[in-house]
Amino acid sequence: MRTLAARLLPTLLLAALALAAGCAGAPKGPRKPPLPKGDGVYTLRHNPPTCLVDRPALHAEMDTALGWERVALEDADDEVPVVAEVIARLRAAPGVPVKVAGALSSETRTWLGSHAARVLRVEALDPPEPGEDEAPAAPE
Image (tube, rainbow, N blue to C red; front, side, top):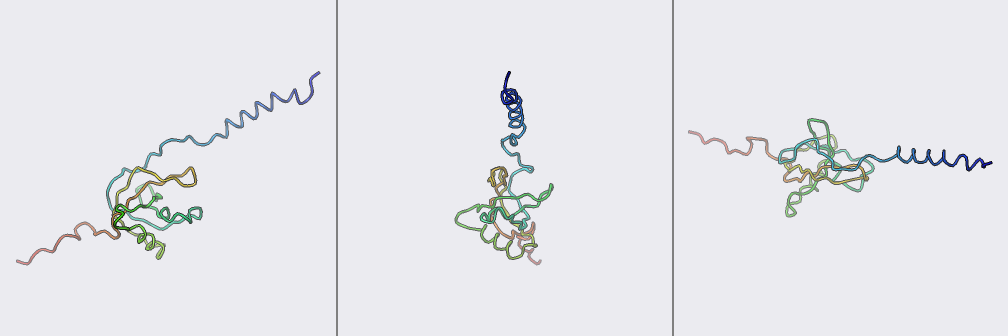
């Protein structure tokens, strides 16, 4: 006659296997960006999550047609640092959106292991509106 432990062992092994298979994480793979990449003028807002307090380059979200998307801010040119100024402006007035000119990349920066933010390489803060940079017409 088998002991109780010997009779329950196959059932316990089957339950452990089912639990392990059912608790698998989300499939890992490349994240497809919801928007096309490219140069443009983007609107940012300050929305720092408490889990990213030590990563200010991830404190901004970009306004998109699909809603707000967290982006990783990087300077487009190492010679002209703009990101520090953008972050300072966002922190100074959290409810006020800021416009930047930059290039939105399909590259991502991961945070908390399973989240990713696309890279926005910032070229300029407060870019001129279309038509603003044109010289006024000369009087005739």
